[in-house]
Image (cartoon, one colour):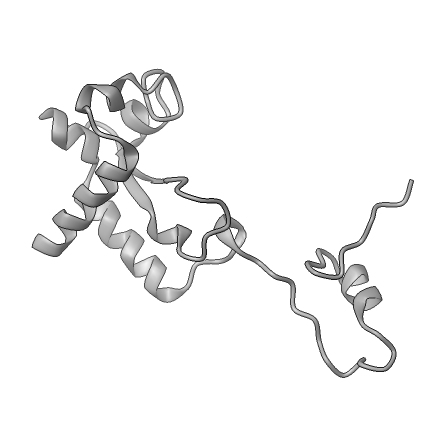
Length: 131
């Protein structure tokens, strides 16, 4: 069975070429890319670097020392949002981001803070405005 091609969001060069009419061959069709699949621009890269310099926000709230490097966790506030690269949390990789009790695990470390991920985003923006 031949895969269906989409004229709205072409994914390969063959689909791009097949989506272009013979009458409008001089008008290029750019693929639509939104959400996490969209590459980051310079402002988003700079913001994410500032967020990563804060350190783990969960360890900070629990009063614990961060023992592993900081990774950025994308918070899902809505699918395919244009500003999804700005909705990131700095979390330590072993305990809070990828560990057994982490955000991607059973979330018990997050529950110990008694904060939701959107509350943690507000705390991160408050920390960034202070520094």
